[in-house]
Image 1 (cartoon, one colour):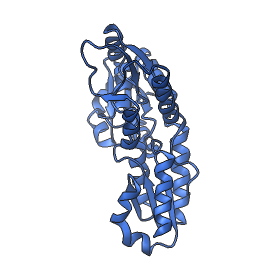
Image 2 (cartoon, rainbow, N blue to C red):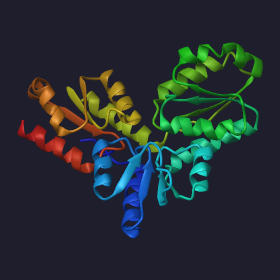
Image 3 (cartoon, rainbow, N blue to C red):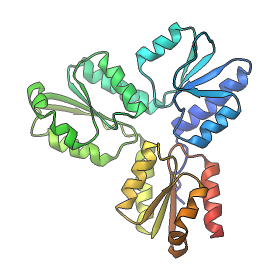
Image 4 (tube, rainbow, N blue to C red):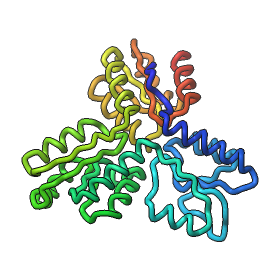
Length: 282
């Protein structure tokens, strides 16, 4: 069992604070705009105590709006405040740092490259922050996408790089290597959070001595899916969301001698423990 498995600091802070806000404001409406974290079981737990997850806030209502751990565009926060909602910002502090670094690069007139998934809420919020200060901000999911910007990079000459907190180091390395012959000045911030780095490193070591790795966590969670992708290059790996999914991999479990278990940053301890219990039965 990996030690660096389950809730990271940012997720734990977001979940515990949101619950506390509802307890202290029992008679008020509490909404989260978008999923607080990428875990269906946690979202259901929040709904059970009256915390509503929505894509849009209802009209003609008042109450508390939680900014989720992935962050939010500044324009959206202002819009919510202007409508009369009380905003509580629970953006992960590591994500805040990426936003600040992206803003810094934009203000210094660098061509800003944000490495990550364009559709991920963290990346959308980072870009929205940088866009306020520059028109030269691009999201780069892979080096193939970067190639399309070759002439733009050559023309601008000064390139700044930040990376989604839950991304793989390999993406950052490949992008920097591609930029070196093209740009005269490159400013790189390795904004992958320490929790992600430690989780990946420990899981890789565990995989070397395991003939089966089990990654527990939501399929919508970026750090969890990246974990599974990394481990598949080392040993046989399965990615499950809950213990119920283990039935799909009965043969793999029965034929394994050494099983390693890790979990994403948004996976509660209770889910991990249930997975361990089921494996012990098998």
